[in-house]
Image (cartoon, rainbow, N blue to C red; front, side, top):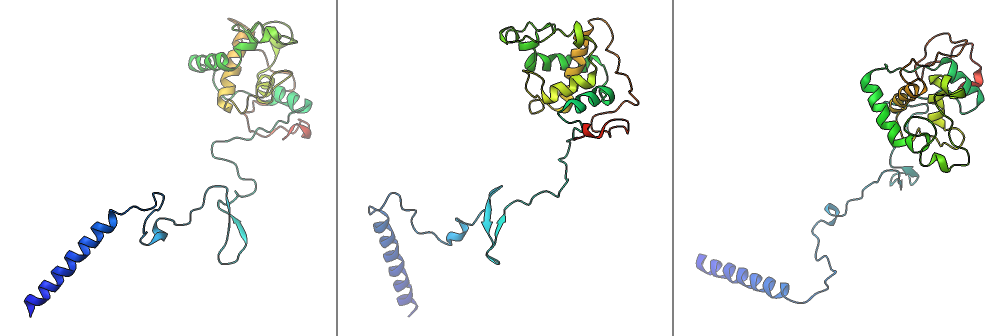
Length: 223
């Protein structure tokens, strides 16, 4: 009896193996994925960033990623409180101070950034004689002469951030720290071998970027 069972099982196993072998060699659709066992494991629903989806429970459309809390600020980002207007430019000159020290390392990094983003218009020595600046309708003025020689650091940073005249904004291209390093190097070009320009009148306290505007500053200077 046991021998008969073993023979039957062996025969069925052999028949199954032969059937699988013959059927696997037959021609079939090349684009067919074949038989999928538990297809949900292969084709599970996924949610991509910034996509909308329909809730299976309520049927309402929702966003895959949650919106940040109102007023939230990204980690490492400091809001710039001076507006892109005349009042903001003036207030930046009066109250905005460079939080970075005038060290050799900062000056060197500022020179490197200046070479990447500024030299093509302002020139290597800040005389407005860059290859691109010379082809503009109005070449950039010299840093070491005229009004720019005494331009305070706050106004330099403000101009780099928002742009001025034909110069576009550089806030999307450089971080705040990088812009401050460029300011340090521009001050060096303003007074080669000398000291940085003095702050404008009515300055009450040195204010790092993102600090509150003093009460004496017009409200429209805020952003």
